[in-house]
Image (cartoon, rainbow, N blue to C red; front, side):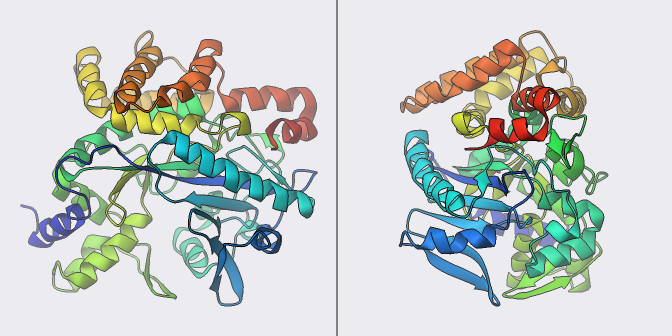
Length: 425
């Protein structure tokens, strides 16, 4: 029997999503980029705050004396776990065209600031030279606490750069879409992995992000592709509540908790009150599945894609939007071609895709080609012409080469210098 507090928190969490039709889904992007010196070593993004602010329209945010971000009316920048990674965050957009225009403006401003101080911005999913150590970590309070709570595995976050998309979702469709998009994790990794070269060497995998971060909370499926689907809102809350409650945050105060979130609630008497809900929103922020509902934003966040090559920077966002938009059609097709439980098959493919990218065998012939066709239909139905942004994904599939596979070849042929030239804006 489900504890009453789980049902209570699930009801509160679901309330963050609009009931009924959401109309045209808005999209928002969190795009992280490694910033490096000309030799490929990580460069301190703190030196970019001044040049970025000189353009005006950006307000600084501080943690103590340290600037941790700049925010404007349309877009902003944030310090990430690694001091050499910057995140570009934009306001919600009506479609991918608007998103592209806003991103191009913000990214151009970033590149100008980087050039001013002699840095380069990379379209890559990981720092290519500087290893993920404590020395690379931005000393935000919560990052230090998470390192204390998780240990050395947390440091993988200091080197990596993801490309995350938020898609506006309705309450009634959210759980089914979450399950489907988590099931599609190997599709995203196979097509968009771009984190193969780190610490100055070939890691031997295409997605160093998924490989390294996937070692956090393995038994619970805390990162990447979950162990299986969830059954309803209470199932979602129950799954997360069974995971370790790593850190709690109240304003500027950060506390290492320990034990599961469920144990924390039971110690408080099992009450689904405001304090429990506040704490749950903190807790679920540190569960990093491929697709995760974000009640505070009313969105489904897609987060397993590496940052993409600069010339194809919308590839992952387009794939993510297409998966969400086409979730019902994709689910119906999966039931036809994988009539037994598809999760073991797709988890096995995910593991191979992390290693081999598009060289990994697909579950059935033309699986990826059919998925892209279904996604194109879904994007066409949005009526915004966004299906044009699928072109890079189709080219990758035709060549059976994703960005990581290409980067590995560039590195093998010319070393780090060639890789930086290949990846830099």
